[in-house]
Length: 284
Ligand SMILES: Cc1cc2nc3c(=O)[nH]c(=O)nc-3n(C[C@H](O)[C@H](O)[C@H](O)COP(=O)(O)O)c2cc1C
Image (tube, rainbow, N blue to C red):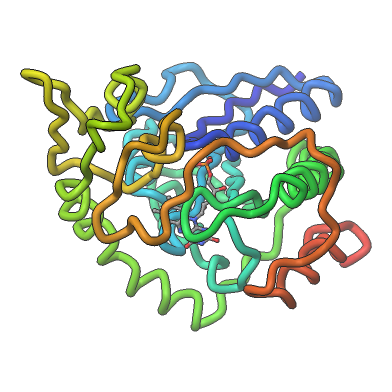
C-alpha cells in the first residue's frame, strides 16, 4: 500500500475541494492518503511517505510564496521520493503553465523527483465572479478527471511539463506581486457600518495579518493577497485597496445546475479546457 501525503494551501476552498477529490480517488485505488494544510509556519512531517503532493491556487501565474516557503522546509532526501503538484486557477490560459517551475526547482534541489503537475480550473476568488452554474461545471469536470490523474500518479507516470516562454516571462514579471501584496494589504479597510464583528477575517487570515484592537481593525504588512478575508466576509465589509475593483465576495453554490455557456473572457481557452483533458491517456 502506498502512503501519500498531500500538503495543500487553499485560501477560499477551491484547492481543498480538489485535494479532497484526490484523497477520495487515491483511497479507492488502495492508497493511504493524508491531507495536511500548509500554514505560514507549518513544518513538513518527519514521517517518510512514498509520494508527496503539493496543492496550491495559482497566484499571479506563480505558486504562492506561502507554498514555496513551505516546500523549502521539506526534509532533504537521498531517496528521490516522487513529488507531484496539483493546482487550481480561475482561467485556463497557458500563461499559468509555468507556475510549477519554482516548486520543481526547490524540490529537486532537496533530492525529490518532481513527476509533474495537474491543473484544474475553478471559480475565480478575484478578478470576476463566475456564475454558480459555471462553478458547478468546473467542480464536476475536476470530479471526472481527478480519478484518472490520481491513478496515473500512483503508477508513477510523469506529466509532460511544458512552459511556454510567454508563461515563464509572465511569472517572472509577477514576482513583483509578492512585495506588491504586502504593500496593498496595508490599504485594506473594514466598513464599520456593515461589519458584524464576527472576526472571521481576524481568525482565518493565513498569515495573521489582521488584528482587532481598541475597537478597530488593523491590517499589517504581511498580506499575501490570498483573498480569504474579503471573499468570506459574510457582509462584504472589506475593501481590498488597489485590488478592490476586482474583488469577489461570497461563496459559490457548487450544487447549482451546470452553466454550459462560456465566459466572454478567454472564451477559447475555457472551451478547450472543458472539451479536452490535456492529461488524458488518449493524448499519449
Ligand atoms: C492574488 C491572486 C492571484 C491570482 N492569480 C491568478 C492567476 O495568475 N491565474 C489564474 O488563472 N487565477 C488566478 N487567481 C485565481 C485563483 O487561482 C483561483 O480562484 C483558485 O482556484 C483559488 O483557489 P483557493 O480557493 O484554493 O484559494 C488568483 C487569485 C488571487 C487571490
